[in-house]
Length: 316
Ligand SMILES: [Zn+2]
Ligand SMILES: [Zn+2]
Image 1 (cartoon, protein in one colour):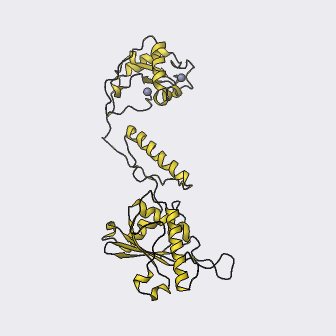
Image 2: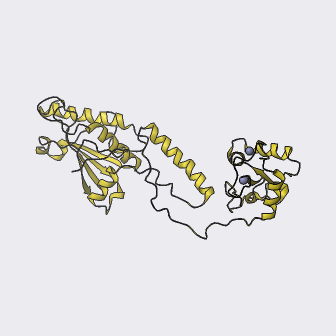
Image 3: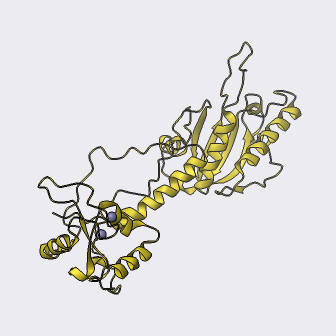
């Protein structure tokens, strides 16, 4: 018997065990007992949230609740058929899904459990008896008890479908996906920092970069004379060698088919550069730059190359 973990990785005070079957497994839920205040220490005080969590996870995996049995010591003296209970609001077998109202289902299981106590005169009114949930799930075939337990009880890993990538474009897409995961977790109050990578792997030979002409860069920087051509402010700092720090941006990025020529290149401060790439109104900013800087031409978008355009083109 083990205690499950909730989504945030905290252990729940509830005991469960698993018995594999040919077409699935049985999930045995230990009763809740004792009291927080009486002489007997509370036992399995988180019976309810743990049961809801199990139902949620089994729903996510599309399992079917075939049958529900009371498994208290008193019930176990009865033939199996007499231990079975039905649910008032859910037909059995019940296909669980992410849409299943697990709270209502948990309450329904509680009512069935309590009703059973009244008929055999024992355990009166206890809605949190030892129960056996007979789950049908072909995925359990060949899985060990341990593997099934881990599947049901391990903390849900953050966004496992969003893997690290060395491709900046792909990374940006995955950041958007991971953000959606994190916001969903925040709604449930279960945000956890991701483990990250202590030794991030290096990729080599997978990216192609454009070969750029240093003459174009030098000419544009000279033209800018130390001021950002977008916001017109002086470069934010000087390089070690005393040159003003400005970056050279392609108004039509090379990856979108733009040329590496001075009529497509603008010198800008790091803030303006990031803004040209990432501002929600970047298309307008681009048009404004073309309208206000006489040498610039409006090159058409001719390609969405898989070649990477770095978000910042840091020069020299
Ligand atoms: Zn600027
Ligand atoms: Zn740029």
